[in-house]
Amino acid sequence: MAEEQKGGFFSDLFAPVAGFGVSFATMFRKIPTEEYPEVKWPTAPRYHGRHQLNRHPDGLEKCVGCELCAWACPADAIFVEGADNDDTPVSEGGTGRYSPGERFGRIYQINYLRCIFCGLCIEACPTRALTMTNFYELADDNRADLIFTKEQLLAPLQSGMLAPPHPMAEGMEERDYYLGKVTKATDAQQQWSDEHAAEYTVSSTTTSEGETR
Amino acid sequence: MGYGIEEKLPSGILLSSVEEIVGLSHKSSMWPVTFGLACCAIEMMAVGGPHYDIARFGMERFSASPRQADLMIVAGRVSQKMAPVVRQVYDQMANPKWVISMGVCASSGGMFNNYAIVQGVDHIIPVDIYLPGCPPRPEMLLNAIVQLHKEKVRHRPLGANRAAAAKRAEEAAMAAVPTQLQPATHDHGGYVGKNLLA
Image (cartoon, rainbow over all chains, first blue to last red; front, side, top):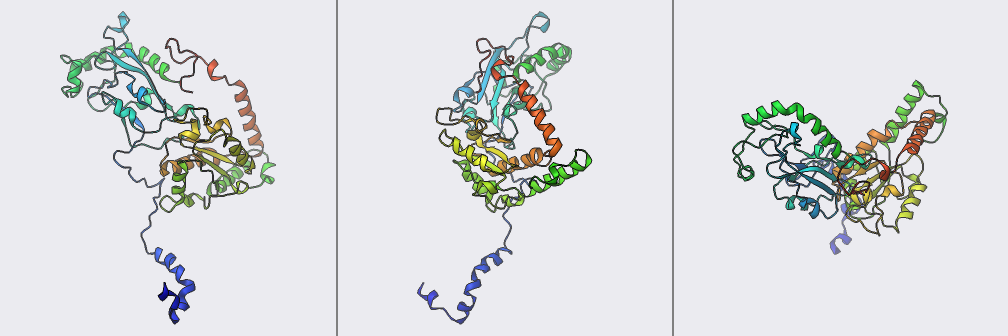
């Protein structure tokens, strides 16, 4: 401090413009700005973004409709309603099988204007049906469109998957799905799906209407 | 842009071009009013810094005076006591003005579903863009601003077109059915007619 106050001829001369040196030197530094809409930097790999409802490798949904996510949610953002899986044919009043085991999530909604992306629902989920993606561009111009329904949250069908409803892989129990014994939709499931696709279009549309709010 | 000749022009090709130019100038020079209320304000300030650089969108400064501001970013939970202040600041802003409801607390009350917090700032002021997140990351706010530009600012109707738009909006509002009178979308027993997600 004392040295600065003493000052030589040149330091006195350049003192008034010394501050500009910082601005000038910045011109030669790397630009830190993220040019957002054009260039998107990746998030952290475990970033809490939009949810996703996962599927088993044969296309059946992992969600069993237990509502534990809704119970865990501190903001009451999740609404789930389960229903029974039904293996009886649609001609005899069956409603179809959507997940292995007893129950499936018939209605699944997440209100993104309540969700605080804390991830407690992910921790609560016993089947890893609900996980989070890194997607974050969720802004919208009305409140209703930010209540995401099951169709919006479900993971897309990947190769080897069949759109439910269809029966479980033959010879497999529910626990075999979690032991990784089912790797893709079998030929029998494919055949069943081809035969019964027309029957379930009606019931699936009624389900989707029921889920839209 | 004041209300000058562009408000008197007849609708048609001429007014469309004027709307385009006015929209472009609004888009590239829009000052937000500082309205940080809670933790979202920290992210909003981060957007003002060099890493995210809100100045790239023509928002050179956060205006501390509502008269000089075009955009209100309500960042944070609005308490009942703050509500009249929010409304007053909004009223003091000059037209045209826009509102971004930043974060879940401002948008719907978020996890604070209690008597102290207004359950959505749209109970007080009209909101143009709702932005989820708790708090939203800075990119999400930039995304909301881009959405606002695209949906509300670029093609804002003027003059005769705006009168027609206002009439349509009023007719739609008169025809709207309250939520509790809308037909139930679920067939779950016992809950029909109750608003579960309010």
